[in-house]
Image (cartoon, rainbow over all chains, first blue to last red; front, side):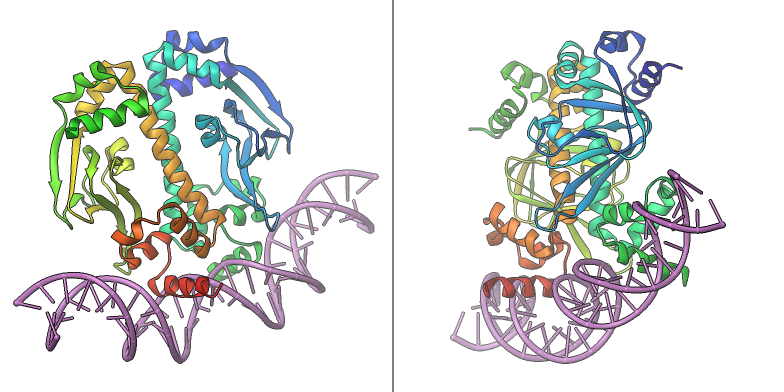
Length: 195
Length: 195
DNA sequence: CTTCGATTTTAACTTAGGTTAAAATTATTG
DNA sequence: CAATAATTTTAACCTAAGTTAAAATCGAAG
């Protein structure tokens, strides 16, 4: 299956985009590969592209003004969108870096082209809504995890939901995602073993 | 200005919904008032309505299974939407209670009617996207505040952004919103005064 | 298989928030 | 305005995460 087919398939299951709907977008999609460590979008850049990950993993992180510390906000992987969504929808400078954590391959579309599709096609506008609703859910789940769960519970949840990522991503990246320091995650892991 | 006019005006500035666009929705909107303490939606209920607050304040809160403690997730006020968005868009049972904190007045629309509008009108589908994007931004700001800020910084931010709510909402509701206990907020306030 | 760098854990100490209950303050109402 | 309820603060003690630096472990590359 070609990369475009993979994308078309994903859009079909998300928003019932059929072959004909997809066709009007086909010319807009570009392919790109990222080496590990390359940036999808950088701090202060307005995010102008919506990406769809054919293969790979990206992280979005924030750099603390004072400490210079990196804090991971999101991970994106295969068959998901990669985008700095707030910057993208508001077209304002991004607060984050979005970086490829492994060699990755994506298809991407420029916001102007996407907006053209939105205006041209009710069906694409519908897709735009579903993408936004999906993004909301992702963010909301994260908000809830901070409000309702302890770091230990967040860690256990992550292990349950994404046991796979522990093979790909170093623990210090994960502790950052959980909102805690490296040594804290070590202590948590130790505590859990003792149960 | 009638309540419907207020709503029409809000939709116009959000998504450029004009008089004609709005007309097709007019029959769907219902009016309702809430006494302080009444519920917009309750735990385990699927949220079937999208509300627009003409006047009043609502809070969405989560009840901790173990401790029975209430944790405030969102406040909604005048000229904003009130809805349990995740439950609404997925039509799954809600994890929250949404309660009126003062006497309130809203207009609301049933999800079936809203979906009718989405299907009927490209413009309304567009509005649906913007509502979702707005909801994303709200949730994302909240995620960021937990990830990047200390409780003290969150408190100071809230004071800066919404000095008004401190007249309406008791501090123990605010501490819950900030993700901390009452005594912690007291300590933070004390600490700040000493600066 | 050894060495260098990256990652993870440990240790020791500090800090801030959690917990519980009581006291103080503020608001409400008969 | 007194009394009652609601809200906020304080106190004392506990717990877990932050911080910093060193040690241990793991992995990749020569």
